[in-house]
Image (cartoon, rainbow, N blue to C red):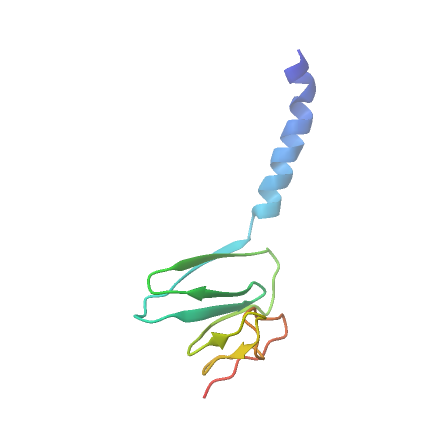
Length: 104
């Protein structure tokens, strides 16, 4: 009987989870290059991707103005400061929401 008593709460939880995940998007970013690239995304941050590596990036429903780009020739120190030859994010490894990617 206790299962039936909790069934309505369980149904509401399932419906909430279903509707919360509806219209969200997943981007699977894969490095098909023969060299390391640093993927960047706003929102999402950034990741180093060695050849063949992937990054699953989940974007919330309703997100507007999102961008994904690749950065190459990156070098960062232990404190996370550095530069990329292409697509730099202001010298940091993780793209900030207002990052402005640069191309040569």
